[in-house]
Amino acid sequence: MNIFSYAFMQHALIGAAITGLTAPALGIYLVQRRLSLIGDGIGHVALTGVGVGLLVAAGQPRPEQQRSAILWAVIIAALGATAVELIRQRSRTSGDIALAILFYGGISGGVFLIALSKTNANLSSYLFGSPLTITTSDLWTMVILGAVVLAVGLGLRPWLFAICQDEEYATVAGLPVRTLNLVLAITTAVMVTTAMRAVGLLLVSALMVVPVAAAQLVTRGFGSTMGLAMVFGLVSGVAGIVISGPTDTAPGATVVLVAIALFIIVAVCSAIVRSARRRRGGQLPAECEPPEVVLTR
Image 1 (cartoon, rainbow, N blue to C red):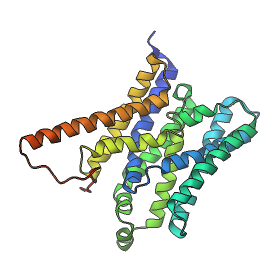
Image 2: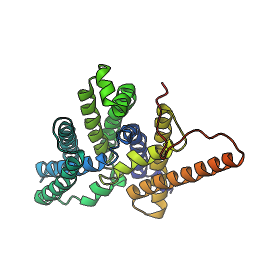
Image 3: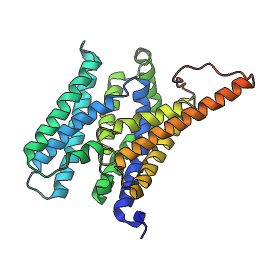
Image 4: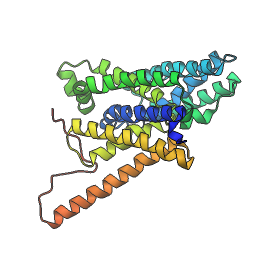
């Protein structure tokens, strides 16, 4: 029997596809704001939420523990993202210090609470993903959270792009900059939690950044960059699961490696095309490394 005829492989494919499609739709804003690593920080905070969830549901059946872990991961990650955004807006504390607090406090709290819960939870499954254990209930949760992320990333695109490019101009233009920043931060927390089962809290940031970086190499407009990045993310997620099945490799890590391989292929092909144009004496557009995204709408 084909391995992909099993329900657990189908759940893994759908979960990875949802993560691959939604992560770049939000990650493009973080790349624009030079906050590519904030997904890592929020992922560390989400681990504290997992610890709280397991502690609250200790002694209950495993499905109840998993549901509690996801629920509390969303809540704690959203609170952490909101706290960082408020610190960035209102205090003189640099963004680097806020991120450092997220990194070390979040992961330490998570490890401490998971140990305190006395459950048999596998810490690696949360850190590096465990798509083969995604249940039908988990899948519905991912569908709902993924829809929320897409609704924010696509529906608020003009306004989120404006605050990512120039906050002062957006303020002068009358946009609710503070509210939009909080929406972006909280949605990032939801995105990280959505990807927790598919690629893990430590690897989700790669799917939010690498497909966007690859798309930037061949596109110039914001909309086209977002669309191509989502395609790259979707291909990476599905291909990673398809490769990890027969090869028996870690699914989350395989998904990220496919995304990086895709970036390298696009970079090499892009360099070859530019070199060919130079040899023909053609006029090349002005560029920088990486190419900036230009709003075309």
